[in-house]
Image 1: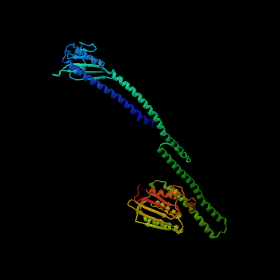
Image 2: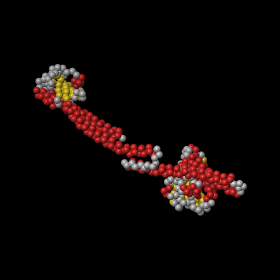
Image 3: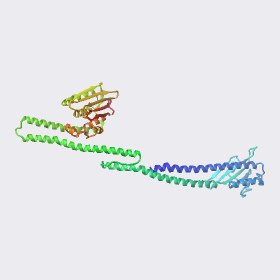
Length: 459
């Protein structure tokens, strides 16, 4: 960030300073050339009517030439068409010949100027042209210093350098301050993530800064809260499953030992004990199957066995299998089908998911209650609604019921053989079908699960 501030602050400023100085110098030289060419044109008009090009005796012209030479701090040489110097303001070369490429070009009616940046002088040649014949009668050669322009440029450059240095210092200080202020909260977040990675879940993030940083802090705290609840649920699950896996085995062992210890045990007692052993085995089997189902669903969707299936018949089969369980508690089960639905699904997995929802509706229902299962579809999805008259789910628990190991009523779940995996398995299956599930519930009044799945499977 410090580098960004420097690049967008100091670099453009330095470039701007260079452009300003270069523009000033170019413009100043351009104006000086125009001024000198104007003076040369005036001298050309004065020289033609006089005899100066033939001899150097023209006091009025000499005076004007010397005046211009003094104003611009330079040297003026007048050359006639014989290449003889007839006037030199330095009085050094008069009577001599001046042969140079610039002078030769001027006799071809070409105006020439050149600025020597290194030595700070400006050289111009200007042809003296006859007004009528347009013949070149001579050449005016001017050599003038540009040190005054350079002096102004140097003064301007010093001022700009002071300004640039001051502004650059301000930019650097501001850049350091703001980059530090911006990155300090991010550094704190990185440190916190490192602590979180090492397993410290008991610390909340409290980072003050810009609005966005504070929002990140709040989001982390929400994530920590959910992770803490999940970790607590996981620990409870491990404890409960360990207990529940051990309990049936303990019961079976006690029952078996009792039978072995008794001699001449009546057949009726054998039957009673074997019936109890069968129940314990079923309980153990339920826990193991749930765990195995969860492990299988953790695999990729590539394991999906997709076939075209009649959803109406599938739901009727599930309800037929579960009606005897509901009948034991006198729970009425109603199936409403609004239209025939054929969809591409994994029949085994979806049967498991829907069965879990209906089984929960039976387990957590009231005596003499009801369960309504409805099926509908549009051009893209089919919809399954499972509503019950059960005990409902507290509002604060509804966001967590699909999490693994989470159980709303732990005591009730243990009584009914629940492991806290059923809804997690259900959601996993529905998501593997690229579908969605939502829950609506009021405590004491019942629960409704809405399932939406595409008619055509999306790989």
